[in-house]
Length: 163
Picture 1 (cartoon, rainbow, N blue to C red):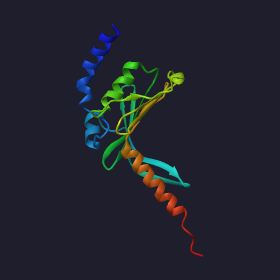
Picture 2 (picture 1 turned 180 degrees about the horizontal axis):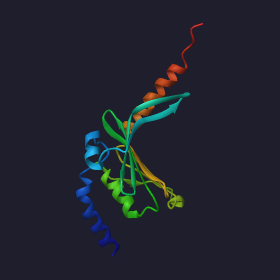
Picture 3 (picture 1 turned 90 degrees about the vertical axis):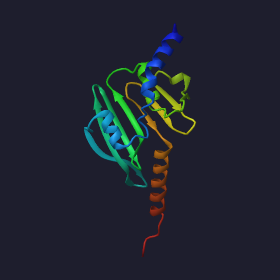
Picture 4 (picture 1 turned 30 degrees about the vertical axis):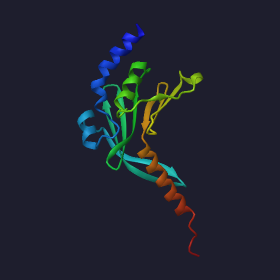
């Protein structure tokens, strides 16, 4: 019975999986989710500085709130949140539509599965779900941009002052 349910869900999700959200351009995100309800900057704080990584677009679909961070014009980090509890089917759907042709491996701590779960793809993308909060997916492109910004801030912070 579980196998039949899983196969049915997988069959229903296959058309959705062909439309990945990670990697989408701003125009593709707007076509998929509608106009953003907010537009801001994806920011990190490092070395006592706040650094912009790129634009951040926020979307609303029914009870879902979606935040997309763009790096080099493509969605490199995306976060889904909603009111109430998450179902396994909702988690599976979000992971599937953001698989980009790859498979997610569950790397969660078995003792914390009800509170927090983690997945990893072979290309280095990661996903993190926190109970009644959100499911966030991060690509290696986002991590590289973050590391580059952090290294630049560290280099600037270590410069000697002109005395």
